Image (tube, rainbow, N blue to C red; front, top):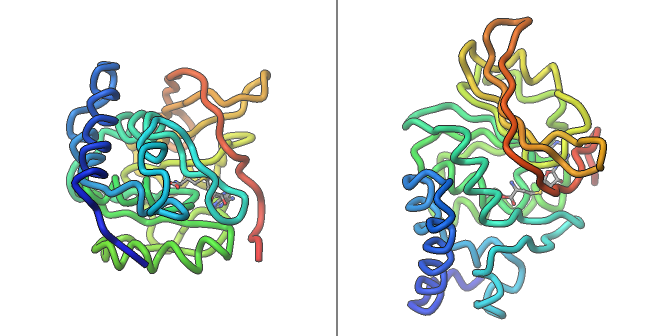
Amino acid sequence: MNLADTYRQKGLRKKLIQSLREKGKFDEEVLLAMERVPRHLFLPNSNAFDSLMYEDRAFRIAGGQTISHPSTVACQSTLLEIKPMDKILEIGTGSGYQAAVLSELGARVYSIERQKVLFDTTPGLLKQLGYTKIKTFFGDGFAGVAAFEPYDKILITCAAPEIPMALLKQLKTGGYFVLPLTNEEDNQTMIRLTKINDTEMKKEEFGTFSFVPMLKGKSY
Ligand code: SAH
Protein backbone atom coordinates (compact mmCIF):
# COMPACT_ATOMS: atom_id res chain seq x y z
CA MET A 1 0.00 0.00 0.00
CA ASN A 2 1.18 3.49 -0.84
CA LEU A 3 1.34 5.43 2.41
CA ALA A 4 2.35 8.73 0.85
CA ASP A 5 1.05 11.99 2.24
CA THR A 6 1.85 14.54 -0.45
CA TYR A 7 2.06 18.32 -0.23
CA ARG A 8 -1.20 18.48 -2.13
CA GLN A 9 -2.93 16.16 0.36
CA LYS A 10 -1.48 18.06 3.31
CA GLY A 11 -2.71 21.29 1.75
CA LEU A 12 -6.21 19.94 1.17
CA ARG A 13 -6.29 18.69 4.74
CA LYS A 14 -5.23 22.07 6.10
CA LYS A 15 -8.05 23.68 4.15
CA LEU A 16 -10.61 21.21 5.48
CA ILE A 17 -9.44 21.74 9.06
CA GLN A 18 -9.57 25.51 8.58
CA SER A 19 -13.19 25.23 7.41
CA LEU A 20 -14.01 23.20 10.54
CA ARG A 21 -12.20 25.78 12.67
CA GLU A 22 -14.36 28.53 11.21
CA LYS A 23 -17.47 26.80 12.55
CA GLY A 24 -16.15 27.82 15.97
CA LYS A 25 -17.44 24.82 17.89
CA PHE A 26 -14.55 22.37 17.92
CA ASP A 27 -11.63 22.14 20.30
CA GLU A 28 -8.37 23.46 18.80
CA GLU A 29 -6.32 20.49 20.08
CA VAL A 30 -8.73 18.18 18.26
CA LEU A 31 -8.36 20.19 15.04
CA LEU A 32 -4.56 20.10 15.30
CA ALA A 33 -4.68 16.32 15.86
CA MET A 34 -6.90 15.92 12.80
CA GLU A 35 -4.44 17.98 10.80
CA ARG A 36 -1.74 15.43 11.67
CA VAL A 37 -3.75 12.34 10.63
CA PRO A 38 -3.59 11.51 6.88
CA ARG A 39 -7.32 10.85 6.47
CA HIS A 40 -6.98 9.78 2.81
CA LEU A 41 -5.04 6.66 3.88
CA PHE A 42 -8.06 5.41 5.85
CA LEU A 43 -10.25 5.44 2.73
CA PRO A 44 -10.33 2.82 -0.01
CA ASN A 45 -8.39 3.81 -3.17
CA SER A 46 -6.44 6.39 -1.28
CA ASN A 47 -4.65 7.63 -4.37
CA ALA A 48 -7.74 8.70 -6.27
CA PHE A 49 -10.01 11.70 -5.78
CA ASP A 50 -7.84 13.56 -3.29
CA SER A 51 -10.02 16.59 -3.32
CA LEU A 52 -13.21 14.63 -2.55
CA MET A 53 -11.48 12.84 0.32
CA TYR A 54 -10.78 16.15 1.95
CA GLU A 55 -14.32 17.40 1.79
CA ASP A 56 -16.49 17.23 4.88
CA ARG A 57 -18.25 14.04 3.89
CA ALA A 58 -18.60 10.41 4.91
CA PHE A 59 -17.34 7.55 2.71
CA ARG A 60 -18.12 3.91 2.20
CA ILE A 61 -15.46 1.59 3.60
CA ALA A 62 -15.39 -2.24 3.61
CA GLY A 63 -18.25 -4.28 5.05
CA GLY A 64 -20.90 -1.76 3.95
CA GLN A 65 -19.75 0.62 6.70
CA THR A 66 -18.70 4.27 6.59
CA ILE A 67 -15.91 6.52 7.82
CA SER A 68 -17.67 9.40 9.57
CA HIS A 69 -17.72 13.02 8.33
CA PRO A 70 -14.67 14.95 9.58
CA SER A 71 -17.07 17.35 11.34
CA THR A 72 -18.63 14.38 13.18
CA VAL A 73 -15.19 13.15 14.28
CA ALA A 74 -14.35 16.70 15.41
CA CYS A 75 -17.63 16.89 17.34
CA GLN A 76 -17.31 13.54 19.12
CA SER A 77 -13.62 14.13 19.90
CA THR A 78 -14.40 17.60 21.29
CA LEU A 79 -17.19 16.24 23.51
CA LEU A 80 -14.80 13.67 24.99
CA GLU A 81 -12.49 16.46 26.31
CA ILE A 82 -9.48 14.16 26.01
CA LYS A 83 -6.65 14.53 28.49
CA PRO A 84 -3.30 12.81 27.81
CA MET A 85 -3.35 9.18 29.02
CA ASP A 86 -7.15 9.04 29.19
CA LYS A 87 -8.27 5.46 28.71
CA ILE A 88 -10.91 5.44 25.98
CA LEU A 89 -13.15 2.64 24.77
CA GLU A 90 -14.36 3.15 21.20
CA ILE A 91 -17.23 1.07 19.81
CA GLY A 92 -16.86 0.68 16.02
CA THR A 93 -13.21 0.74 14.90
CA GLY A 94 -14.28 0.92 11.25
CA SER A 95 -11.51 2.51 9.18
CA GLY A 96 -9.49 3.34 12.31
CA TYR A 97 -9.58 7.08 11.60
CA GLN A 98 -11.36 8.15 14.79
CA ALA A 99 -9.07 5.90 16.85
CA ALA A 100 -6.02 7.53 15.22
CA VAL A 101 -7.32 11.02 16.07
CA LEU A 102 -7.86 10.00 19.72
CA SER A 103 -4.39 8.49 19.82
CA GLU A 104 -2.91 11.74 18.44
CA LEU A 105 -4.60 13.51 21.36
CA GLY A 106 -2.58 11.31 23.74
CA ALA A 107 -5.37 8.93 24.72
CA ARG A 108 -4.88 5.22 25.35
CA VAL A 109 -7.36 3.79 22.88
CA TYR A 110 -9.20 0.46 23.12
CA SER A 111 -11.39 -0.07 20.06
CA ILE A 112 -13.81 -2.87 19.23
CA GLU A 113 -15.28 -3.82 15.84
CA ARG A 114 -17.92 -6.48 14.98
CA GLN A 115 -17.12 -6.78 11.23
CA LYS A 116 -14.42 -9.33 10.48
CA VAL A 117 -13.41 -7.70 7.16
CA LEU A 118 -12.60 -4.48 9.00
CA PHE A 119 -10.92 -6.20 11.92
CA ASP A 120 -8.73 -8.08 9.42
CA THR A 121 -7.38 -4.90 7.82
CA THR A 122 -7.65 -1.86 10.10
CA PRO A 123 -5.30 -2.93 12.93
CA GLY A 124 -2.51 -3.56 10.37
CA LEU A 125 -3.01 -0.13 8.81
CA LEU A 126 -2.91 1.58 12.21
CA LYS A 127 0.39 -0.18 13.00
CA GLN A 128 1.88 0.77 9.62
CA LEU A 129 0.98 4.38 10.26
CA GLY A 130 2.73 4.28 13.62
CA TYR A 131 -0.35 4.02 15.86
CA THR A 132 1.16 1.05 17.66
CA LYS A 133 -0.46 1.69 21.03
CA ILE A 134 -4.08 1.42 19.89
CA LYS A 135 -5.53 -1.89 21.10
CA THR A 136 -8.12 -3.43 18.79
CA PHE A 137 -10.67 -6.16 19.53
CA PHE A 138 -13.03 -8.27 17.43
CA GLY A 139 -16.38 -8.53 19.17
CA ASP A 140 -19.76 -7.06 19.98
CA GLY A 141 -19.49 -3.55 21.40
CA PHE A 142 -22.76 -3.96 23.30
CA ALA A 143 -20.72 -6.05 25.75
CA GLY A 144 -17.79 -3.61 25.82
CA VAL A 145 -14.31 -4.87 26.67
CA ALA A 146 -14.60 -5.81 30.33
CA ALA A 147 -11.00 -7.06 30.57
CA PHE A 148 -9.67 -3.47 30.54
CA GLU A 149 -12.34 -1.59 32.50
CA PRO A 150 -12.78 0.96 33.94
CA TYR A 151 -12.48 3.55 31.16
CA ASP A 152 -12.21 7.31 31.61
CA LYS A 153 -14.44 7.81 28.60
CA ILE A 154 -16.50 5.71 26.17
CA LEU A 155 -17.37 6.61 22.58
CA ILE A 156 -19.89 4.90 20.30
CA THR A 157 -19.39 5.61 16.58
CA CYS A 158 -22.53 3.82 15.31
CA ALA A 159 -26.21 4.54 15.92
CA ALA A 160 -27.15 3.17 19.34
CA PRO A 161 -30.79 1.97 19.55
CA GLU A 162 -30.69 2.49 23.32
CA ILE A 163 -28.09 3.33 25.98
CA PRO A 164 -26.06 0.12 26.37
CA MET A 165 -26.08 -0.35 30.14
CA ALA A 166 -23.22 -2.87 30.15
CA LEU A 167 -20.99 -0.09 28.84
CA LEU A 168 -22.03 2.36 31.52
CA LYS A 169 -20.80 -0.16 34.10
CA GLN A 170 -17.34 -0.09 32.48
CA LEU A 171 -17.10 3.70 32.83
CA LYS A 172 -15.38 5.47 35.75
CA THR A 173 -17.48 7.69 38.00
CA GLY A 174 -17.28 11.20 36.57
CA GLY A 175 -16.45 9.78 33.13
CA TYR A 176 -18.05 10.78 29.84
CA PHE A 177 -20.06 8.48 27.57
CA VAL A 178 -20.56 10.00 24.10
CA LEU A 179 -23.04 8.28 21.80
CA PRO A 180 -25.37 8.94 18.87
CA LEU A 181 -28.73 7.74 20.16
CA THR A 182 -31.46 6.93 17.63
CA ASN A 183 -34.43 9.29 18.00
CA GLU A 184 -38.07 9.23 16.88
CA GLU A 185 -37.20 10.66 13.43
CA ASP A 186 -34.81 7.73 12.93
CA ASN A 187 -31.78 10.01 13.01
CA GLN A 188 -29.42 10.19 15.94
CA THR A 189 -29.16 12.78 18.68
CA MET A 190 -25.60 13.22 19.91
CA ILE A 191 -25.66 12.57 23.64
CA ARG A 192 -23.05 13.06 26.34
CA LEU A 193 -23.70 11.27 29.61
CA THR A 194 -21.66 12.00 32.71
CA LYS A 195 -21.63 9.14 35.17
CA ILE A 196 -22.56 10.41 38.63
CA ASN A 197 -22.78 6.98 40.24
CA ASP A 198 -23.95 3.49 39.23
CA THR A 199 -27.57 4.58 38.97
CA GLU A 200 -27.44 8.30 38.09
CA MET A 201 -26.10 10.19 35.13
CA LYS A 202 -26.28 13.70 33.71
CA LYS A 203 -27.44 13.96 30.08
CA GLU A 204 -26.57 16.67 27.52
CA GLU A 205 -27.63 16.84 23.85
CA PHE A 206 -25.61 18.15 20.90
CA GLY A 207 -27.64 18.08 17.69
CA THR A 208 -28.71 15.62 15.03
CA PHE A 209 -26.50 13.23 13.06
CA SER A 210 -26.75 10.19 10.82
CA PHE A 211 -24.78 7.03 11.63
CA VAL A 212 -24.72 3.41 10.42
CA PRO A 213 -26.55 1.16 12.89
CA MET A 214 -25.03 -0.44 15.97
CA LEU A 215 -25.77 -4.14 15.45
CA LYS A 216 -25.69 -7.08 17.83
CA GLY A 217 -23.24 -9.98 17.52
CA LYS A 218 -20.27 -10.40 15.20
CA SER A 219 -20.30 -10.50 11.42
CA TYR A 220 -17.97 -12.81 9.45
N1 SAH B 1 -14.99 5.02 14.06
C1 SAH B 1 -15.13 4.58 12.70
C2 SAH B 1 -16.57 4.71 12.24
C3 SAH B 1 -16.99 3.53 11.44
S1 SAH B 1 -18.72 3.36 11.19
C4 SAH B 1 -14.18 5.30 11.76
O1 SAH B 1 -13.53 6.26 12.19
O2 SAH B 1 -14.05 4.89 10.61
C5 SAH B 1 -19.24 2.47 12.62
C6 SAH B 1 -18.60 1.11 12.83
O3 SAH B 1 -19.28 0.52 13.94
C7 SAH B 1 -18.76 0.13 11.67
O4 SAH B 1 -17.49 -0.32 11.30
C8 SAH B 1 -19.61 -1.00 12.25
O5 SAH B 1 -19.27 -2.29 11.76
C9 SAH B 1 -19.29 -0.88 13.74
N2 SAH B 1 -20.29 -1.49 14.64
C10 SAH B 1 -21.65 -1.50 14.52
N3 SAH B 1 -22.20 -2.18 15.57
C11 SAH B 1 -21.16 -2.58 16.36
C12 SAH B 1 -21.07 -3.33 17.58
N4 SAH B 1 -22.15 -3.81 18.20
N5 SAH B 1 -19.84 -3.56 18.09
C13 SAH B 1 -18.72 -3.08 17.48
N6 SAH B 1 -18.73 -2.39 16.33
C14 SAH B 1 -19.94 -2.13 15.77
